[in-house]
Image (cartoon, rainbow, N blue to C red):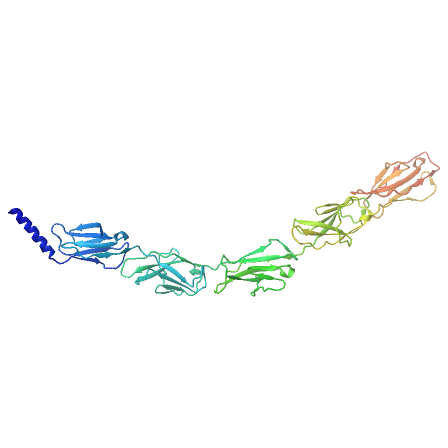
Length: 497
């Protein structure tokens, strides 16, 4: 009897439950979509089953995934993640209808720019637009570089809804811009957008080809202007302080980013600089640094070593040619009005910038000049001033006596005088009879014989030799001294100093 009673109570209890209203499951707050990090509470409205309380179950594809039991009629998930998404039911007296919980990762803000130029430059009118999925209740904040404080609306910025307007970007506006969205009434902030740069005006770069320094008259030179890697720049060229761009003329050729001088002249000298302007946009680059073009036509300089103004037959002379300090000149030598360069022969030695005549002769007389030509470049210097080489025959020594008595009496005084042209640096050598060794030498051009005696009799002759030069004059004619009435007191020859 006791057992039957227990079964009856259970059946009554089940019947009571089956007849009761359905449990109701609600989400608080009741958002259609939750984002990771938010808090959601699942609340079950119903009478809990005796001793068991409330049960929440999550299903995926009609399969039970998780179950949570509590004595309270609510189940809070904080923070919610994407893994919590699914269909939920609660169970107290009966099973509730299913309720879907949708959880999404934080959306990423998308930043776009109008106009869609890349890169953007200072001075342009720029509108940045920020969007976070199609949800309508986002409030947008704008940031620059690594700043943590949002940009405020100032005279230089205009914020309208999801747009940031920069009407005329200045230098202070350059940097990396990004944005994020925040949902009204909810503690949800999107992922920050990718950044978009607002760049400073680029600087033009000016180069020269070839990189000769200096540039010589008649050479071809090309200036090249570049502004970053953007392809749509139009280039403008300026000279010195002119505000008007250099135009294409007979002396200039402008092609793309190149300014070419096909045959540079002195009038092309000056400081050149350039700038670029973007087609279809009000953007002008910073001007380039300037390059100074110096167009020279150097003149060869001719010198002679040694610097004798009277060159005697047989002497060695070297002509030296120089054109500025540039090292790669090849030198050419010319004589008189000849257009053909003097070649290296037995009578000439050409080494580098030197022309040597080792033993000058009469045939070497004439006007010499030179010019230089640069290796690897079509450049010929101006010809040098000419140097006139005069090669004189060796002068004759002239011998005279004073007084010119005939005969010379014993004890008398006679002076012999030796002269070689008007040059002052002759050393005089004196000879007697057929002796080849000088009996005396002196810088003075005369010798005195005092107290003439028979031993002074004989043939006298002289010659001159130039100091510091390998030049000896032709010997003089001889003079014969005869002493009459010779005395026993013989005097020696004195050199008059």
